Image (cartoon, rainbow, N blue to C red; front, side, top):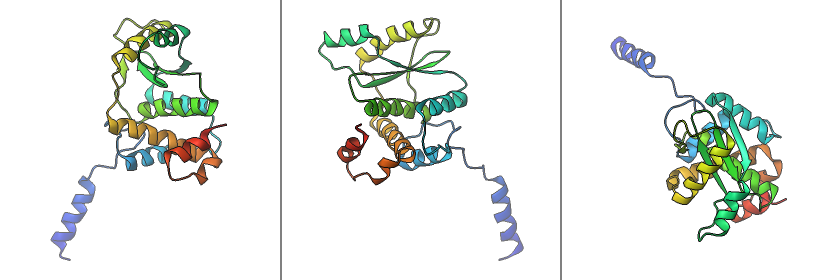
Length: 194
């Protein structure tokens, strides 16, 4: 190798941007390999409490994340309507992120729902926004959830898959019984049951 080629190689190395930190990047994470890197970079303990992960994500985002069951009036409104209530939803306002989940399922499934929504947050997907000035706490976030749910807006298939992959990888890493999962989604779901 000539000196000129070596110099170009060295210059290329120094000019190259450092790899983006998966937990603090700027682009939405949608590919399974990117999700694996993201979860791997989080350095999660073997027995993870959901609150620990929520606190860690809130620190990274610089704003609180509130995890709440759907209020009764939302459940009632959807029971009276034609559409089923989604298992979970993430709504953001200028001060906080809110994750709502259904309570009419098992505790393990509730955790999976919450992890899925936290996956959207971790993967930097763009969630539903409450208009500025509307938010005055959990009640306004709950009211906004009705509108969001009725619009049935959602994430693209790639983002849904990324959030589901995030939830599955976090569960597999932090719940030892999931390490021996089956190959299908049904087999993995059965292991989530209490």
